[in-house]
Structure formats: structure tokens, C-alpha cells
Length: 264
Ligand SMILES: Nc1ncnc2c1ncn2[C@@H]1O[C@H](COP(=O)(O)OP(=O)(O)OP(=O)(O)O)[C@@H](O)[C@H]1O
Ligand SMILES: [Mg+2]
Image 1 (cartoon, rainbow, N blue to C red):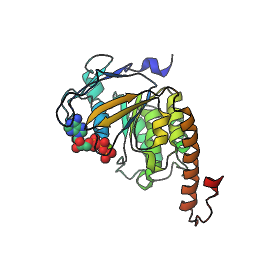
Image 2: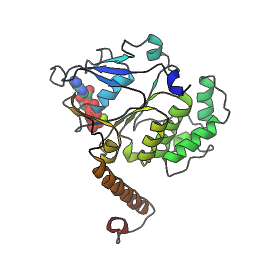
Image 3: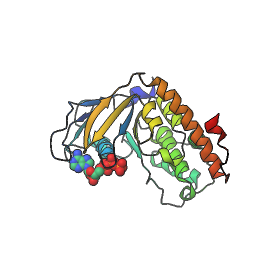
């Protein structure tokens, strides 16, 4: 049996709400299945965060957008919504912070205890997974409050995968945090997680299978490129890796008089 068949969420359905001017949103429904990778794009203020917030809170026409979220075709059961240990959704934003002054190990151990799970190597596997997402290594002795933005996000994603084991992971503009987004997508896809990325990053947008385009608080379009962007994706992957290398050189204090990455 795969983990996924144990998941209480086989489909998530988003029913339309209203636009920023109060008009009905122009789609019938959006259904999301386990393993789907989706990006949410659109100008600043177009409602991207509001869209994933609706999913996170299982909106029932009670948010500013008036959207409704169904789980397996019906209004979600109360415990999925209210009980944090049953909640199938983890949302990772740029503001995620751990306020308690714990080490990484203590923080993960506390999370395991709260879920009545035994360690059995899980703490090590969470840290190992997080370290695949970030270039700056995390160790168990580090204090969570002193982790960088990229390390914190990587740890929370790994925690969501291995401890909370949520089938759905929402990420709000985490691309600038210096995490290896292609690895995040690859690994979460292998684990059959549903990933919804709010992003301004062309590489992330092209790595996902479906693109939801927002405008004036509403879903304006849903694009399913189905391989049509493959050539562009190959070019962007190279550009992205060049930028990463340049970023590393800038971080290490180099003067970029020669930009061999770009010229190569
Ligand atoms: N359907 C809607 N109806 C009314 N107001 C909305 C709707 N969707 C979003 N808003 C409001 O519009 C504002 C901008 O939305 P939001 O923060 O989701 O934009 P964003 O696309 O995430 O922007 P950014 O790129 O800057 O993060 C918020 O105050 C939000 O509450
Ligand atoms: Mg936003």
C-alpha cells in the first residue's frame, strides 16, 4: 500500500467565487489530484496568496474571495479542518518562523512527540532531506531561530513530508530563499505530494504541470502546457543554474569582472 492510499484527500475541488469587482469568477471548478504540481502566477496584488489561503483554510464561501473548497467532492469533515494533527495541508510562506529557542533536534523531537510518533531515525531523515533542498547545511545542534530563510523553509518542507506527512504542500513565493526548487519539485513529485507554488519565477512556473493565472482576485486562465514549453524549460534551466552560480560567487565576495557562467 502506498502512503497515498492512506491519504484522506483524494481530490480537492475549488469552486469559483467572486473577482475583485464582485463579479462571478469565470471557471466551473478546479480539481486537484494527489501528485499534481501547480503554479499560481499573476501580477502583484492579483490574489495569488488569497487563492492558496482559501485552500489552506478550506474556505466555505466565508473568505473575501467567496470560493469553496471541497474534499473528495464534499464539504470537508470538521476534524480535517480543526485538528492540526489531521490537517492534510502544510503551507510554507516567507514568514514561517519558529519562535521557540530550540535546537533543530529539539524542535523536530517536539513535533514527533506532539504526533505521538517515535523517532526511529525520522529526525535524521528530516535533516537529510532538508539538506537536499538547501546549499547551507543544517545540523541538529543549530538553533531554529538562527537558521537562514532558505534553511528554515527547507526544514519546514522536509518536516511536512516526513513528520506531518501532509499530502498537500502550499508554497508562497519561496523561490528567493535560496532553495533548490527543482529538487523540491522532483522529490515532492516522487513522494506523490500535491504541490501548489505561488511564484514569480519562470523556472518554477515551467517546472509545474499546470499554471493558474490570476487577475483582479480571480482565476483568469488555467494553462496546461503538456510539454509545449519543453525547449524553453531547457533554456531556463541553464539560465537558472548560471544565476545560482553567479549568486554563489557574489555571496562569497567575488567581484564579477568575468562572468564565465553566462559566456560559457
Ligand atoms: N477575489 C477577491 N475579492 C476581493 N478581494 C480580493 C480577492 N482576492 C484577493 N483579494 C484581496 O486583494 C489583495 C491582494 O491579494 P493577494 O495578497 O492575494 O495578492 P498576491 O497576488 O498574493 O500579491 P503579491 O504578489 O504582492 O504577493 C488582498 O488584500 C486580498 O485580500
Ligand atoms: Mg502574495
